[in-house]
Length: 299
Ligand code: NDP
Image (cartoon, rainbow, N blue to C red; front, side, top):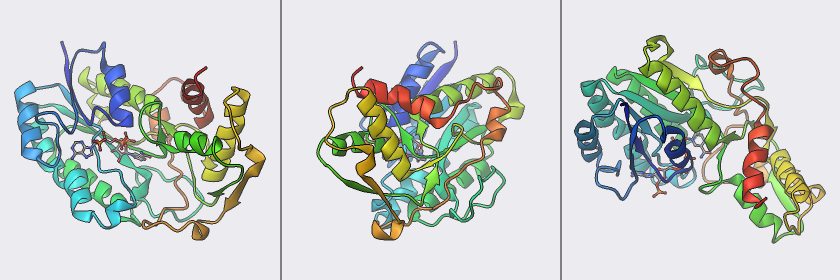
């Protein structure tokens, strides 16, 4: 029976991985507070890997506080990059596949077109730079890996934009949201299902699938249109609201300054990924978002 180790079990993606991997084999789930689950002590994580000896390690743990990372850069680099050295090395030692998650923030956000996996990364903030450094650590280690770059993650479990807008939608009558950052909202459920499917295929012998993928659904939106979509769909689901979609106003990023600069163009080209799945099995972002919204709205 295959064995899987999940790191970051309580994050949005870690939570969904617990579900996606449940019937695939024996699963050990570790969070920050479990022995061997804190990436601040990567040697202990490596020891847990060597001890459990899984076929694959899914690393869903990360330092994800994008704005705080600007001042807590040491911690961001420790969790998102340095910790991966002993983890990747332990995976290599036992021949385990390392499944890892990265971000659209490895790119600078210039231009208007989706970036492929081969596009040159050039992060504009500390978080993005630390995630890029993490990718490099894994690739340099020589361990078998699947690296999935994703964007704008949301799910039923954890903190995310959908939940924030639903909360504000019950408290406010008007709202300003930036409308010049474009990307694809990606459901944690979708990320877990896709990465599990590919990991199983690699473990079944399809070694040519190893590598880096852009794991996003089809389509694109900006944060303002996403907020409008959330409110109008929540309204359809009879969610009690004080805010209407028409009362959400688009503003440029300059009017909503944040410690960390955000890329304007977060479009990721998902054609490499889509080529591995049956035609039309990967849908537009709103198909997945509607499912999560329906759960959150309590229907
Ligand atoms: P979350 O922030 O929901 O989860 C991250 C998890 O990592 C949390 O459970 C957190 O624990 C844990 N963690 C933080 N520090 C440590 C540590 N020192 N040791 C162990 N665990 C730790 O992230 P997501 O699930 O949304 O993200 C999953 C992956 O996707 C990450 O690699 C992220 O970089 C990437 N990604 C995320 C995006 C997003 O919009 N969220 C966008 C693009 C990529 P705790 O709750 O205790 O802090």
